[in-house]
Image (cartoon, rainbow, N blue to C red; front, side, top):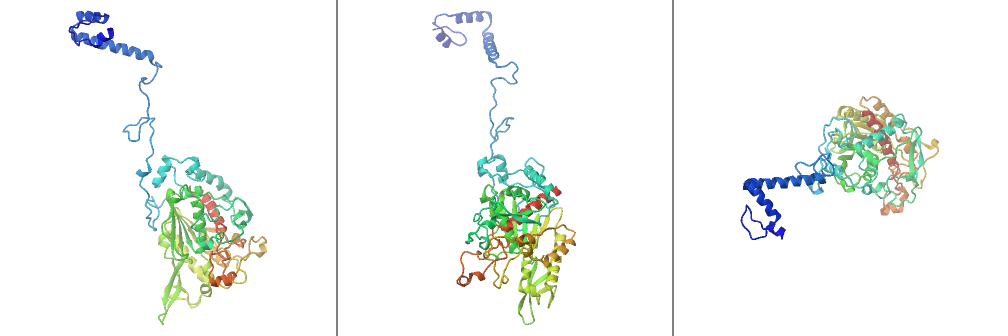
Length: 522
């Protein structure tokens, strides 16, 4: 009854028939002492005082910084003033702008900054680098995938690159990479046969039916050091925001495909590795480029078998004749001259009949030599190449490599006269069976010595000479023509290399060279 009396008590006085209570008596007392407005104020003060007293009584600590009724709660990324302990959510993929795949081949790396910067590993997000990062880099930073989703060699930081450089630079800096031997290593190859779809049929020996596989388990071991196993994640970090270009003949294509395969298997999402241009017939396209989107880098190949320009003239009878302009660099030079790392090669096409004879073929200016020795022509061509390098390559920004002559193993003839290397399943073990050092490579060395721009010579001639077992031989294609089926042993490739195979070791040496040279630059 008392509670109901309070509930229905008239506001600001008034009469009621309800039974008088203790509350009514208190009200009457205050009404007698204070006016109505004053009594209202006293009521409010009394209620506030009681509430404050209760709060102090139940407070967990008198030294608390904030009142107990405040608590820290997560604030969304849309909050205008998030607290210190706010949980910021990563942007959803649909809110990120995808990278445009329509990359222009002349400058395949989008928004690259400061073309004169030294060739150094890109800085981490907390570093001071101005390198452009892709949207996917931001996504990986804000929402890192779980360990089960990420290969061990993926998403490596700049610290990992520095640690790898520091680990190897001392033992590798004085190492003679090209004096060594092939040893068996069951952890090789670095990628599974048939796992890399970009490999040309001509190099895909296992898919073409080659039965033996031990040739893939050989690793090159220098005498004075151990080559680091190529870590695709580390190398991609070193290439972040940069261009690596191979320029030369189909043996450099062999090396380019090997490297792309090793790098491609190191990325988290292979759908973000794509070609800037489509691939056609083996020699049908003059340029190729693979884009590694998450690293904003490209690995490119430019077909230039002589490094200088192939041309033609019209003789007095109106007949067109092919010539080789020894005084002009190849036409694709404008496209690769801005690359950060360039690997050149030439040699095999200089052994063909036309170049070997040198009759009415070599040209300088308007003059076509009636007869010119191939070594002299080779020297003139390399001199033209060397002058181009010194004029167009900034050694503070770019690294230049020249890969030497890759040995061939034709028995009983040359590539076009029934030469063979079938049934070879082991490398040469007796050094007396190795061939003499090619005279053309001596010409190359003399040209390199006369250059002021530093060029690193990848002298792989001897290490490849051991590997008579590494060529496609008869396993160069899956389907033979009717003519080839009649005499299959007449059609052999003892010049190029199976993949996986020997070119993987060239790239491991390139990887070791980069670890040393990038560390010296940095």
